[in-house]
Image (cartoon, rainbow, N blue to C red):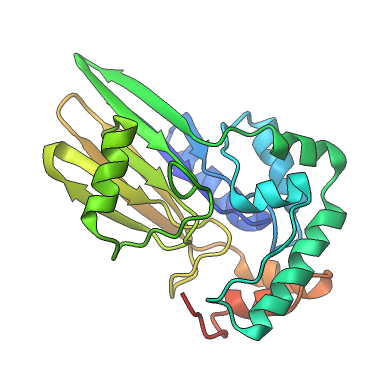
Length: 248
């Protein structure tokens, strides 16, 4: 049996990341991967990047990582309210000024996606890691998406499992032949009502893959306090308290 932990979308929230990493360690899971979006919306962007670097955790380039690494302009999204649009511009500009040049270089060199192959007994399992999809790191795929979209991703990747983040909403969908599409949710900026830090554990044996979505409380009040004391808009503190109206 092999266990693999996958997490995503830390978004500068170091207290949430530390809780997730501690839980993974307590479970004795050595194989761990991050799907990207280390930065923006909480004030520990550099510290989060350095934690990932120091622990040598393989990590993908999320859309926010790409934007900070290459100083890409922010484009308003139609799903956002005027308040969130204004807050987003300020928060991302804060990251562009705050993230060190060395950490920006690290972000710029992250892979776009990774494919893992594990051998358990006589069985090879293929796990495809993406930030949001095979072609883009900015595609929103929700649980309500037509199953054929995920089946095509699995077929294109030649994978038994495709794992994604980006939407900050966890789900797991099983298809024929024990294939799965899984969203591991978000460590640091969950859009689920409980606002807990979320990640996924895959248990691989010779017969099947079993995904388990894990959701953990963390010192959210500390994150809220630090956001309010930083140059990041209070919108993101209110978001963590679930005080904002969310438009998906």
